[in-house]
Figure 1 (cartoon, rainbow, N blue to C red):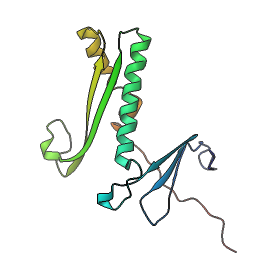
Figure 2 (figure 1 turned 60 degrees about the vertical axis):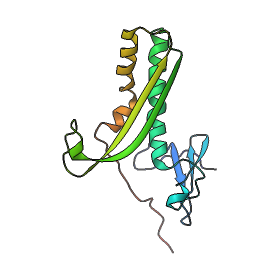
Figure 3 (figure 1 turned 180 degrees about the vertical axis):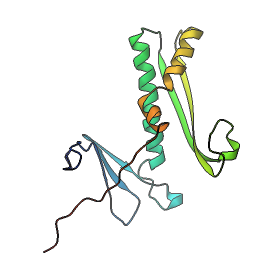
Amino acid sequence: MIQAMATETDKQTVHVVVRGGAGNFQQEVIAGKHHLVADEPVGVGGGDAGPDPYDYLLTALGVCTSMTIGFYARRNRLPLENITVSLSHSRIYAADCEECETKEGMLDRIEIEVEVTGPLTAEQHAKLMQVAAKCPVHRTLTSEINIRLREVEKPPMK
C-alpha cells in the first residue's frame, strides 16, 4: 500500500500516486484512500480496464462544476433538485475558434453542458450557470499552469 509522503524539496504531501508496468497502458491510481484504475481503449492498444486520462480530466472538471453549483444552491437555499454535467474533449484548429487568442495550430476544446432541475426562477438559473464557470478546477484549467516534473533522486549504487 502506498501512503502519503512528503518530499524534502517541497514538503507538500503527495495526494495522488500513479504506477504501472511498461508492458501495457493500465495504471493503478491511488488518490488518498481511494484506489482507481486508468487504461486506454482497446482500439489504441489498451485493455479498457478503466477510464483514459482525458476521461479523468473531464471527470475532475464535471465533478467540480456539479459540486460548486450544488454548494452555491444549498448556501443560498435555492430550490435546486438535480445537476447533470456532460462533458466532451476534442482538438480543433485554432483558426476555427473565434473567441480564442491563439490563431495557429490546434487547440484543446472542452464542451460542457449543464442541466439543473427544480423550481428555479430564470434569475436563479442564470446565476447557477455563472457559478458553474467558477469551480476551482475550471479556474485551474483556464489559468496559467506551472507543472514541475522532476525525477525521484535515487541513492548512488555501490
